[in-house]
Length: 130
Image (tube, rainbow, N blue to C red; front, side, top):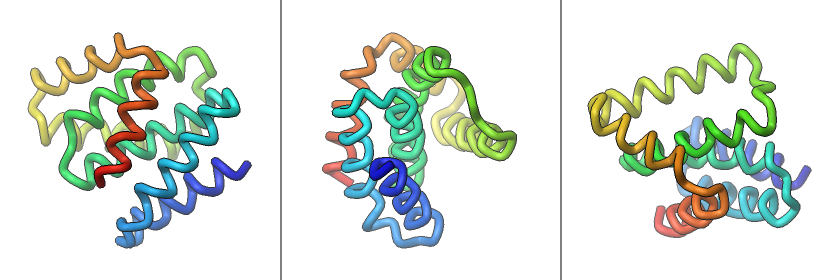
């Protein structure tokens, strides 16, 4: 529950323009989810961190993380609301627009082949540098 609260606080901070708090909150939430083997929390944490990365000008890394998330989400079950699905689609469109279709597809495929633990490490390192 703590990881989910941290993630939600980070998303609120990001969407209200108080971005400086988001990386630390997302990092802590993702770390807790990983430590407790909460796969759904890991998926949601990676998705939230991808949103932050796009916001901060790192769309290629965001695409890699979301490629990994696509495979992870299949294993934990979709359980996204229609609103969440719409937000995810808009996020993908923004990343694709920023990178261009070929570069987006390459980064996405790299992410699809990235083991979850490596994606988590990559995300945590990224959060440290935002």
